[in-house]
Each structure stands twice: as structure tokens, then as C-alpha cells.
Length: 347
Image 1 (cartoon, rainbow, N blue to C red):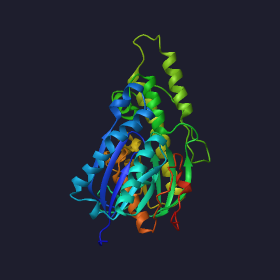
Image 2 (cartoon, rainbow, N blue to C red):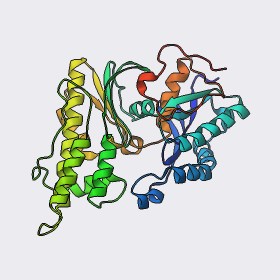
Image 3 (cartoon, one colour):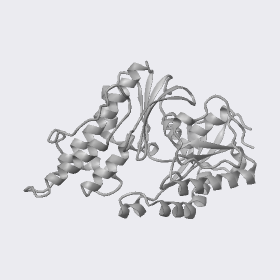
Image 4 (cartoon, one colour):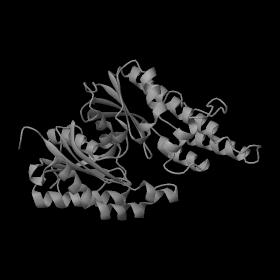
């Protein structure tokens, strides 16, 4: 093995087919993402069976493109990392099975990676002149997840809060559907809100006093009732104002709870990751309100990609994790259930 560690990673947790080669957990040698967004747009969300079939069609070419882009073959790789969960079962199986086949054929070590952990480790890929400092508070906010964790060191987590119902990204998608804005909801809401007045409608914030958990179902219901009440109004539904008010309500709760957690746990930095972290007003709100460094990956690393899986895989590889070829996918795999101290070699 060379002094430098090269990880080839595969990510197929949802509707992106992705592969990447990353050096030492920090330097992206290549990253390839084949998006299925256009295929699923007509359904207003991801159609699971279609997603898995499309992964099968494209994954081998995507992995080869990643190797070619890095100018290497499997012979130059030190380990393979693959998203084991959470995610859509049919999608996860495609990536895991290919990774197992490559490991069997090449003899390379195989590492199953938690998708949410991957989002956090995207912050180490962002090209900053400094790394996030521990202890840190990480907010993972995406279409399927809203998680707030304390990260005490590499691979060591304490769950602080999570969503009790809809994830923030899911609420964006559902609200966009109510407003006939299309899919994916996050960027559509952001664009519509640019010309809106966020103060026109007083949408609720679920503070859940004394808790760092989140709830967005009440906000979603309030938007629905507002839309229904304006169906017959002169001039129609004020889409931009509703979008702006909804977006501000979500951002207000996410930022306030994250900053409170950071203060209570005396964090030295904050990481914000996941697809919703691409939202421009959310990024601006964190950067203006936080008194400690905030690390938010560039837009290309906010959404699902394999470079983040390689980064997390690097630290697990260095810690000694090696997974046998018999491991199964974990469609529901919270960060709180990750092994953090010692790793068991699965026979």
C-alpha cells in the first residue's frame, strides 16, 4: 500500500448513480454523478423501482468513468467504499452488489458507509484552508433526513435531535407540489421565494421547547390550509409570498436549534450538510448568525455524491474497519447505531 490512501466509492442510496476516487479523505481525484431527476420529475418525487432499474443501466459506466477520470485502474486503489444505508432498498442493493463483486475480483478491502455520515464528511472535501474542529455540531438536512448530532471526534457521534415527522427536504418537496412548482422542491421553492414577501403569512414554527428535535408537519399543514383558503381569491394564489414564508419558517427553526445546540455543547465549529444545505438563504443565515466557524460544502457536494462516501470511508479504513462480503444493506440506519470505537471483521 502506498503512503497515500486512495478510495474508490460508490453511492446509490436514492436516484443518483455516483462514483468517485478520493485521496487521503480530502482530495477529489474524480467524481461522477448520473442524475435521474428528469426521469422522476413527472411523478413529483422519486419512483423507487425506476430508480433501481436506472442504477443497473448506468452504474458500471459511472464507475469506469470515475477510474478513468482519476487516471487509474483498480490496481491503484487501496480500498472500496459503498453506501450501505440508509436509502431505498432497491437502489442500495445495486451499489452494494457491484462493490462486493469488485472486492471479490480484486481482493480489495470493502467498507460499508452510512449515507448520513458521508454527508457530514463532505465538509472535509470542501477545500477549506482549515478543517472542522471538534467537538462540532453537525446538521444533516436532506429530503429524507433532518438530524442534529454532536461529533466529538472522527467517527464518534451523539444524537441531539431528529425530525419527528417530515424531514425538511420532504417538506420542501410537498410544499412545492402544493404550489404546483414541480420537483425537486428545494430549488423550486428557493426560486419562487426570491420575489416573495416572507412576512405576508404568519406560518408556525414548531419549537418543541426543551427539545432539539424537529417537526415540519404542522408547517406543511398550515401552508395547505392557506392555499385552500386562497383558491377563489382575486388574483389567484400568491405563490411567491407563500414560498418565501414557508422557506423562512424552515430556516428559522434549523438555524436557531443548531446554534443553540452548539452553544449548549460548547462546540468549536458547525457543519451543515445534505441536499437542503444547498439552499442559499439557509447558507446565508448560518454564516451571518454563527459566532463560530461554519462549514457548508459547495453545492456539488451538498446533494448525493460518492466523494463524500469516499471521505467517510477513508476515516473508517484508517480506523480498521473491514467488512466481509456477506453484509446486507441497512435501509434504516441511524447515525446513533454506527460502530465508533472497535470494528468487527464480518466473516
